Length: 164
Image (cartoon, rainbow, N blue to C red; front, side):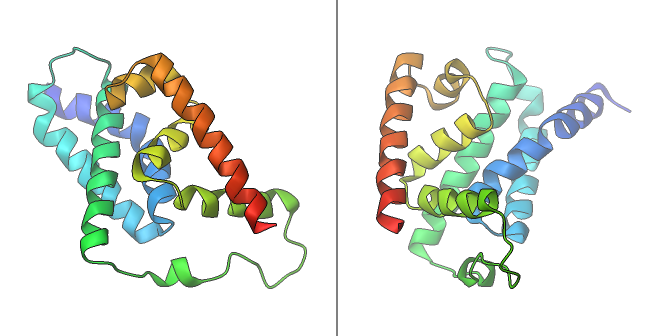
């Protein structure tokens, strides 16, 4: 096994779940999220030899994932596709759906209504990515990330209040 293959295997096993959660947060569709994960890691494989170690692998992979999601969203704006999973209500047939699940569903519905860049930022915040690293991924300062996170939280609060 080559060094490239070993490094790729480590990166894939370490970051595949995070990349999937990011992609799923955008698409709310399992199959599409899995496709985006494959696309992200195919880009990691292709560009692994040219990685210059100016940042951590995690920052580099987050940037690839965020850009891949943004490109997918732009494609969908130009050629909208409605997925069946997105049309289904997130209410189980059993009325014992927990309050936490209901709140989580409401939050994700509100997140979907945010702008593309705000969705990326809040998805990383929900994944406990440090704000410094979010700034590196997006090419903005940590202070700017802090301001954006504050504004996004306010916007989410307003969106959630409207749904009540």
